[in-house]
Structure formats: structure tokens, C-alpha cells
Length: 176
Image 1 (cartoon, one colour):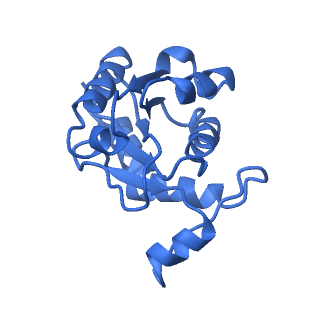
Image 2 (cartoon, one colour):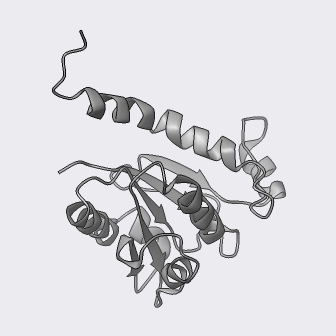
């Protein structure tokens, strides 16, 4: 079974994680095989929002109810999320990317390295400058699409998706 690239999307409550997930699904669904795992304490609200807004077909979106602290489900004990990613990978054997959207968390929350290969944090301008200082970051305006291409390039390049696709095309072929 092929292991998809797992992209964690984190940030505080109301910061725009689900809006970014929706925009990325819409932008990438024609190029890549996608799925999404969302996290909420007691609901599947974000998963339902993505389904209602046609991010992906409903069977490609799993809402995880953590029943407790969202930080734990992405960091200390990511087993519930790892199981959801595994279910999606088995259901769709050719997945390229699974977006794992955290429940609302603080600026210091990190994803377990077993759960996320790449991580995107959605924060406000003042928080980005506070946390990143002079280090690079990118702003997006999802209403206009500003900055989304930069995020997509980051996923393509750092997730090595172009390399993976090229290798799959050459698998079993002689280059000459």
C-alpha cells in the first residue's frame, strides 16, 4: 500500500484552517489523489463543512471526534488520527496527499512526526511576526487566492510530489 504525504494544518480556533483545507482541496484535486482528516472534540463540524462545500467526495473526508484535548490527538497520542489516515490509504490505495486538520490549538502546538510529514500553521499577522520573527512565512487571502500558489509550491517541493509522480511513471520502465 502506497503511503500518502501527510500534511498537517494547525492553528488557533477560528484562524482559517478549514478555509485553507477547502482551498487546497479545490486547487489540488485535479492533480493529486486527496483525502482529509479533520479533528474536533465532540463534533464532525469541519468535515461536514468540507463535504457541503464540495471539497472532495464525502468518502474521502473523515471527521475524528477526539473526545478531549485536540493537542493530544495530533501530538502525544496520534493513534486515532493515524488510524483514520490508514483507513483512507486502504480505501484509496493511490492517495498522494492526506490533509490532517487539527482541532483549534495554540501557536506552539506541533504535530507528531509520525502523523505529519509537512506542517502548515494558520495564524494572524501579529502572531506570525511574533512566532517567526525574521524567518520566512507567507500570507494568504483565500477570498482572492493571494498566496495560495506559494503554499501549493511549498507542498509540491517539500513533499517531493513531482519526484514521486515521475518515479511512478518510470517504475518498471527502462529510461533508454
